[in-house]
Image (cartoon, rainbow, N blue to C red; front, side):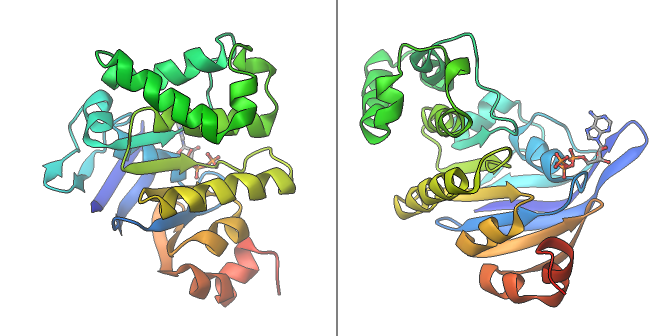
Amino acid sequence: MLTVKSLHAYYGNIHALKGVSLHVRPGEIVAIIGANGAGKTTLVHCICGLLKPAKGAVLFEDADLTRLPSEAIVRKGISLVPEGRQIFATLSVEANLEMGAFVHRKDGHGIRRDMDRLLDRFPVLRQRRHQLAGTLSGGEQQMLAICRALMARPRYLLLDEPSMGLAPLIVREIFDIIVKLRAEGRTILLIEQNARAALQIADRGYVLETGKIVLQGDGRDLLAHREVQRAYLGKG
Ligand code: ATP
């Protein structure tokens, strides 16, 4: 289980996280929804070791991740699909996948096997494996960003706004992939501004507002919640 305990984070004197606590149990999809600037990216960066929180803790199974460098966190089985995908545009699709496997760099055979499996599963990436990643469509780039994260062999996958900038049909494709990843036994923490799409597939969710969790519950219950409908689903 991943547990975040009373996390506080700052950028200079901006107090971006004000005591955030949450947990993600194995096999769940947990959604964090919230508006622009609510602190969602700050939260995932604290979990992944990209930002050090001022107070609080990030615990994973028996380990305290709070002060660990990000490479050590990837080795423990937590991998990030970053906001805006951050693929390496001037490298090939294959080279992007290899980058995702940097923690297994001594296991060339295993990397080849993992890559083959992913390319079998996503034929459009196989077809384009020698192409520069920057030439892929937005949806293909998101698929590549997910596959790159999978190359690290994570048990927990953190996705930061995977729907950003994608057409609704493509968003559905990406969310179908996320549901399949859960079915394979991976655990998902899904950060989204697209509350509807996220809560439809989430087992549980949290609503983050100006650095605080203001609501939490089952995905279905949150979708039906009046405050969520008003603030995030444009109803009533
Ligand atoms: P978005 O959807 O825009 O990414 P978010 O919910 O992920 O929003 P964060 O990016 O975590 O929000 O930002 C939380 C707060 O911290 C905001 O007030 C933001 O302006 C501020 N912030 C984020 N990054 C920095 C930074 N590098 N320097 C200063 N302030 C920052």
